[in-house]
Image (cartoon, rainbow, N blue to C red; front, side, top):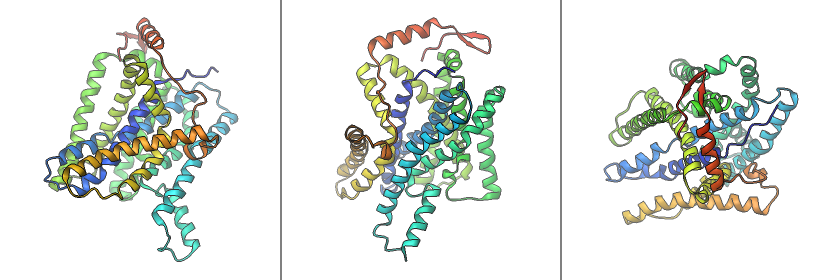
Length: 396
């Protein structure tokens, strides 16, 4: 079967997602250290929560790319074998390397351990649970999804009708786990490292990956406006409920935080996905290519940038408030650009950089002005059809 055409816009979505991740991590200390009465505290709370779409978007994209790439291929042993070999080389191996690195940095010089056996045991437990460092839970839950992917792919290929119900079924699975955990399991720490907490994102990505062309033809301006409104409303509620907790000590049932987060970040993932097509078609090619490069390096930046922030925060920025606020912005810039430079340098200087930072494309995707015009013209020519019903042409 034919190979799916590459979607360059995906790299732009990844770029936007990594910017969100770094924003959340660079402002996290400010939401704890800064006085709640500070006039800038609402701003830090907003930046820390409104940009909390990064990891959820990466999860959505992971499912989208897998189903878009594999759904129309022949399902056999070779496909499964190659799938797992690629994940082992480009995801699990870097995860192991950085888990060991962060474990050493956090636990060094191992004074809390009684023996080498205890060190190894604790590392293996953290490795097996995604807890060697806070941000590594994303890679850990991705590994869980990789274990499920061949089974889900086989089921969806056997019965395509099930794919049409994938979105609501993903929400059902996720919220079944939320309620079971709330009333029966009562896991209070580590639910973010369990893939069941993200089923809505996986199934949304799977649906769009399989029905990508039909979805893009069906989409329209009024749907975009409705989606953006939904995104902003739930984003505002999500920011507000955290501000009430942090600044006013007003607490709600944990399921409300999950509810607002889930619907906000699902909408955000879709908004960023569609926004990437607008960026690709409308903005200058030089800027688009810069975002594409950032997207290509996003996995390496994701797993490396907390190391930059960890050492950056050892610098004493206490004293004048202006210096402190500037340091938060400086932390964002350092985490982004130092990490970006390190990953870029590793790729340029070593053919083994994939061991640490994952796979890079052999040829970087890029766009040019001619490509912009051709894509826009092609989309305007295509009738928008889904389930046999015609609608207006998509304008993203």
